[in-house]
Amino acid sequence: MQEFTTIASIRAALRDRGSRSLGFVPTMGNLHAGHIALVREARARNDLLTCSIFVNPLQFGPNEDLDAYPRTLDADRRALEAAGCDFLFLPSAEELYGKEMATSTRVQVPELGNDFCGASRPGHFDGVTTIVTKLFNIVQPDDAFFGLKDYQQFLIIRKMTHDLSLPITIHGIATQREPSGLALSSRNGYLNPEERRQAPALYRVIQDIAKGLRGGDSNYAGLIATATRALADAGMRVDYLGIANANTLAKATLMDKDLIILAAAHLGSTRLIDNQLVSL
Ligand code: PAF
Image 1 (cartoon, rainbow, N blue to C red):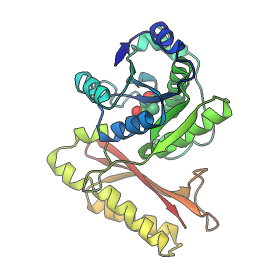
Image 2: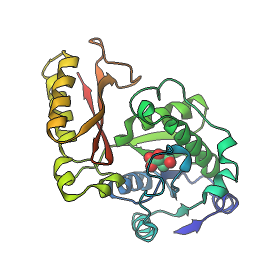
Image 3: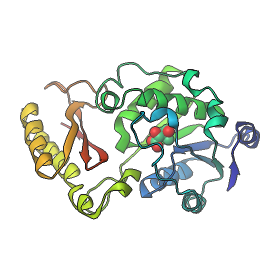
């Protein structure tokens, strides 16, 4: 695996790939089995594979965990090399944004980012779409891979790629889970032992809603109210919990066949998200 920290050097290395296909997995590091599932899928589908590790300041709000975000570069390097990564891009914030991040150009996808994580984290998705566009322009992959745990992010990046006519296929990879059902996330590392015991309730409650929907319950508001109470009983503070159209993220109607249950909840100072697709 070759490493690069500058845009010029990774561009030069990727320039002569001829007809070999290039996969790309952008990450913020602190890699777990969820990331490695993306890397393996990318590896299987492409001749060459680039991964990036960059904790993007532009997608963190002023009171979020940018400084505390776990950085585990040595372990990440080993995991990427073992999973077959060919090129690792490790830029600094200055390399990507210069000294003027606050006034640099943003990429914004309207509407899809209005609700759910977009409402709770203003500006977050503009930070994501801006960095992903920049990375796409630098790496110029054929395929790019994102985890479906961040379902809203996945939809936004897929739409952005389509709207900007970028010649990249966006792949969404299934969420990896602990045996308890808890979705793997870098932020699980913030949980204390008691919170770790409580955390699987998020997925359990989402599964209860999914079971209700599949069983024909069309009282969406009732399902959400019951689930909200269950999360509070499990010690969580709900940020959002909703049933939406899986393609538009508009509030689900009885006409919708492809639904997504989306949830975010605070456990102590940690914010966890999860979701479940349901096809009726
Ligand atoms: O999902 C993430 O880890 C980040 O949002 C991404 C896509 C790497 C952009 O910084």
